[in-house]
Amino acid sequence: MEEIQEKIAALAESIAEQHGVRVYDVEIVGNARNPFVRVYLDKEEGVSLDECAKFSRSLSALIDVEDPIPTAFVLEVSSPGLDRQLKKLKHYEQSVGRLAKVVTKKKNADGQNVVIGRIMDVQGEVITLITGDGQNLLISIDTISRARLEIELK
Image 1 (cartoon, rainbow, N blue to C red):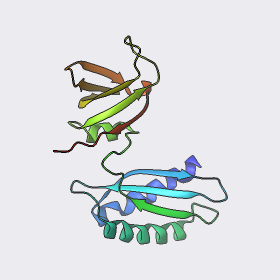
Image 2: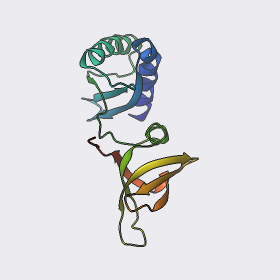
Image 3: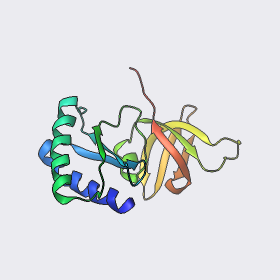
């Protein structure tokens, strides 16, 4: 499935610029007989439903021609949302200055493995977070179990 995911991501990337969006992530869930393909699009001012629909039609046609999936599939194109998951290093880089909830694989000295803080920097594979109490934390991306942005109301 990973090879198919990479092919679909490459196809999506190949048409993203002409649609004025960037591909945030591609997921394939379900099983090999009934795959569910999710493509998440993003841009600075957000992605509209109409933009997702147009992108979906273009990508669907391209997938039909290139045929990377040997079975029938369901294609869903959407925005990753305000509380988007942070999976890749580029997601953290694009989110500098934003508030995030990070769950680490191991507990820290305080016995906690959940940290909420503002992403201040990304150097190599290390993310710098500043917590609400002003604590500076350096977290290696390979120690993160999962992370997502927190919604901030202003």
